[in-house]
Length: 158
Image (cartoon, rainbow, N blue to C red; front, side):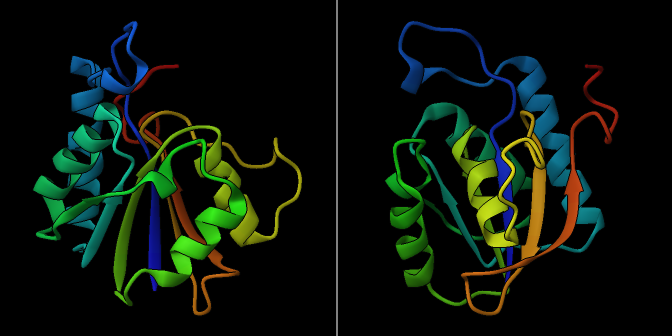
């Protein structure tokens, strides 16, 4: 199983954090990630997103570009979810070849590091719009297949 951990793209500021939509630049980042995945031949069999608007919008744009998987919203991809809660949820999702997981910082990078066996919190970070592909057989440990950022794709300058 390949797990694609995608941090939501750039979002607008707002008083209601859960309702913040993607910025125009964030939409462009999401489109480019979707194009990258399509060129790589990735088609998602399953897709999950945090229920927050910016994550859901990122997932929808990426899926529109490279897959027909039905998007499911889950609280397991919120920052409030513990490592244990995320791990239990991950064990329960149905088997699939390519699974998209869209969430937030800092938890998404933390779960990637946990699966890779990396203990140093500064050893792997996911900027907005970054995508980490991990391959796992047991959903407890994984190998990093690739890490792509919007900067690497030419859509972010910082």
